[in-house]
Length: 240
Image (cartoon, rainbow, N blue to C red):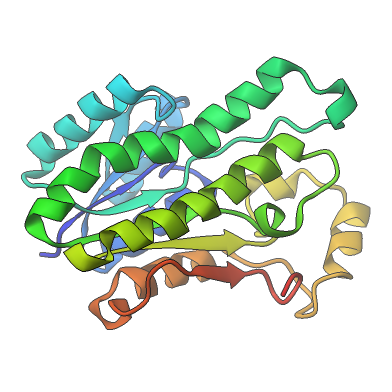
């Protein structure tokens, strides 16, 4: 059996795909969620993946949640996938402080919270794999997403700095920047909007969750141990 992996926001969308891919590869997976208990329970029943509820934007909740994972799954955390994220879109001149702060807290501060709890143990054991899910819009920006783009750009800077600090301890820290991926979030878009977006993607389609999950599996594998501080784009060539 491989080590313990935590996936934040791990019961829906991209996070669910990552959780299932790691589980199928033999890792002990803890899928974190904050809201949607019924959906999380159903996910656990269907997949056999243990689910854990805590608010990743709250540091003390992260401490308690990770301690519970270690107790229930029987060991330390070797792999951390920071996937949890939200959007609260709107033009900046109309954006509320709450819309700014909540996105920064969940998308960026959560990455600090989770990494800060697990990194001391990884350093002591001289092993760890951390993957932070950023976004194409953290690289290029997006109208109506100043808060989201800032948070995801922050994730990239965080990743590169922590990678430099951690490399000598055999801990790799990388980011994945997905483009438009078919999930329940993109399913609500109109066909006209989808067609407009697709016209700007050289491969000519939206990505699928399994393609992001495959990138995660590659980066956590021993064969990727010489890769750290990188941003792996999974966007069909939409932004290069």
